[in-house]
Image (cartoon, rainbow, N blue to C red):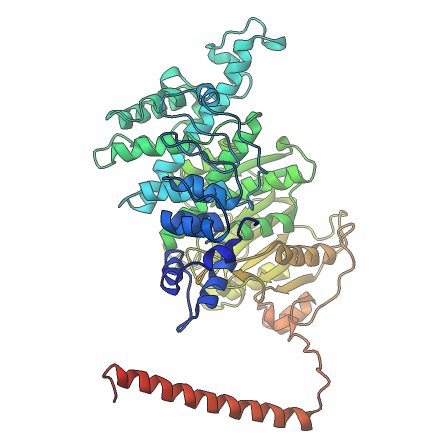
Length: 637
């Protein structure tokens, strides 16, 4: 019998158990939902992945799934049983730390990777895909259980700092092995010479800061101080990391036993055959954890994280193949990471882009430094954290691309009335939206382009001179495209947002001449709910928006652009003026054309009325049934 899929496995559970799983994964279940309804809800949930669901089940429930599908149900540990259900190789014997899906097994505390490989046979290699019941989710569930009662905002820095330290150490170990072998260019090299690492653009890791040393001491009460000392040494010997690492692991309120378990858990992400695989895995874990922490922190999560689908859309719309990229509200650096991914996916090299950022929150800035260092991206974040309006760290920068998600409707910001950036009008003290817009414009190169997120009010507000500033920007022919986004994309706010795309020069010779024209896209109906409060844009959604914009601006191979009622419209500056310089796409794209079903009205109306009466009758029956049930419970009223 084949291994069960998610639906088949869920089929053995009771309605009550299924409802409990829906609550665990924060899925909104309709009142009076039947068993089949709950199974479908869980089956379609991205958050409740098959592996995550199995991890939540009790051992006896897992055994029952095995028996129902003629699988071996023996074993005292859950991990081997889950592996059997998923059709994987068996997990390590009890006493060994469980391996992550698709990865080699982890060594125990203090054991080098070679020792772990010697203790057990090499597992069959499974395909590595984030869609393949991702190891990130399993690692997150395990790490989250170790959080205990610690606030997510605080725990974030504990976990991500350790993930970064693991990356630093893995990269160091790989180069150390090459130096130790002494072959080719490394003949006669000293593996303990710091310059050998700096010359290869590898961070130097002192012996006391290496992961093997920390994992060997993970069970000791002093482990918190050992980690702090490691962070201090890394910052001392690697100037780019100065001030970027969390050095608060030794504090009294951090449970050292749980810290040791967390170190063992992160230590289970092992180097495979090539170091680049480890970097990619750690980068994926870091990105996944940022997402999960943003969700856990809710509103505050928006301070450091922009949803990946929004970042992808901004990057793919602008297509930053080469040049200077700037984000003056960079959070944890997601715009830069996605830009680097875009360049590499289109055959470019990491060095094709130069990265400039600024962040006012010191702890968030640390996340950005680690996030980019994790991927080998060199970035200029300025000497320290700073408020962009109070102290611009890159005053002379003229960027080819500006990508940003600044704070929405910020009323607590510093304004200098004679600031050189206020070229189109002095923004109001009570809202920084158009301060950000003008800051972006100020930093654009002559052929530069900007893509950024703003609250919907920025498209239509006329308060405190905002309408005049928007009109001046439109008349300067800077607005290239406006996109209305669906709601529920952000962890920090449920309000819908919009994307602005500005072009300093619409006739740059690379694309068609778009002077005095603006594209409007209404994407509010796109996206898929991934849980009851969050929506995501699919690859098809992104391709539809990006393809429309690229076709409109005349990109090679993008096809021919056409207005689509209810979705997109190319409008002239004169037409925008007739709408009072309001940039809300819904005003321009019109209503979606409804296809005629061919049924004549004289036949259709009686049919619909008959259906309505039938539904009324069914409603009355349900009402009587509910009243009868309440009466049976003693609540007849």
